[in-house]
Amino acid sequence: MNAETPVIAQRAALYLRVSTVRQAEHDVSIPDQKRQGEAYCTSRGYRLVDTFVEAGASATNDRRPEFQRMIEAGTSKPAPFDVVVVHSFSRFFRDHFELEFYVRKLAKNGVRLVSITQEMGDDPMHVMMRQIMALFDEYQSKENAKHVLRALKENARQGFWNGSLPPIGYRTVAAEQRGAKTKKKLEIDPLHADTIRLIYRLALGAEADHSQMGVKAIVKHLNARGIFTRDGGRWGIGQVHRILTRRTYIGEHEFNRRSKTKERKPDAEVVTVAVPPLIERATFDAVQALMKARNQKTALPHRVVIGPTLLTGICFCGNCGGAMTIRTGKGGRYRYYACSIKARQGETGCKGRAIPMDKLYHLVAGHIEDRLLDPDRLEELLETILGRREEQSERRRVHIAELNRRAAESELRLKRLYDAIEAGVADLDDPALKERIAGLKVIRDQSRVDADRAQAMLESTGERAITPEMVGRLSQAARERMRLDGGGYRRDHLRALAQRIEVGDDEVRIMGSKSDLLRTLVAAEGGKSAAIGVPSRGPKWRRGWDSNPRWA
Image (spheres, helix red, strand yellow):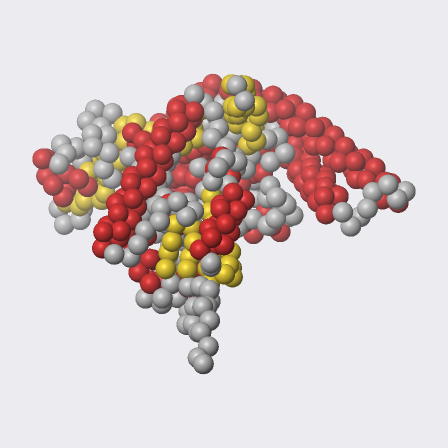
């Protein structure tokens, strides 16, 4: 008598996924999917052997850890399960091409994909129906994304923050209540704002030693002095680079600036949100110019940046904006600054004029000596800066007091927690208590470091304070520093006083920064180099690498 062959139950694996908190709270939540999946396996006689749970992941791509773990298991030999059970095909994928790719990849290893709510067979008709449903899921996903983005852009246009982590130096504050939703805006975080300002000063060489720093040098400077990041960690190159290039710090936060592929979107799709500025626009622009000069892909050739002539690299055509370069005539006896666009393209490119080199030197240097370095003119130009010094000092004193108060308050709270632990009221092994203690220590230590640094800056500023009475002496020192013994001009000093020269048909425009002018005058009186924004040596290349790499 032959015994009947026993029926072996198929092995099943559940794949559960939600992409948002809203879904987790409604009928497609993880527990609900799990309950329905287990009931489905029981009704079909499947033996449930594994469950893969993906919380908060989009199904528009395969960058999902649990999904990849499930695919890896399903394509291994032998496969640990025969069926993958999902609530609906949209839980598995919302891209029809990717859905079919992974369905066929599993099928090659004998693993089927089945849906609780969309049961399909394996015949061509059901395959076509599954593909059509996948197309509708993909369309719905893209439409939902479009509507969500439109709502986020409108929220940004109204000046509200869309919920991501604010840039360091800012914090969110409740601004408006609309029903159950609390609308938030950005405000300056006094605990970290000074760190951002310090990074910009280091980049410009506005600290005590007046030496400009690149991104790597700034990172090293911050970490060496125990200046922490917002979460109490060490600084990295990418963080500092983002801070130095982010327009949020001049009050212009750009929302929807880049796509998922990190490509910049058209300007029409970018929403600029007004936020409180942390950095002055002139300071930001100066830093961008420095970083552009250091970038080997955009920097001027070595001979232009540090060439022997006074104005190369800062002299431009007033008509087209092109660089003015050296041209010679009569076998080299005459030298001119001429528009490079006109030289390459002729008058169809630009009608700009050429001007003798010596003539332009005397025009620029003479104007700087007679007009810019005139004590009355200097006092007028620097009046706003001089007037702001005491106001800035007062704000810094208030800020120091606030930092000291925070440090003392954190220390007091820590003492109370320690007293509670000693009294047996609180348990030191409690994870929440450990996290609270660690957080208070970070706030206390950061506040102390920031207060000490702010105090040192206040004292340093007080020692180097400039009054209108000192302007005359500074003016004379600057004149002496600009002139060479042989009657020529000191190139680095002249370029520090004027950062851009534009040569028009009937005028020469000289432009510069008031902040740079003030630093140059102080450096001139102290006998230091006054070069602002001019590299002191040529670029150093490393084989196969940009010597100043950028991190996004």
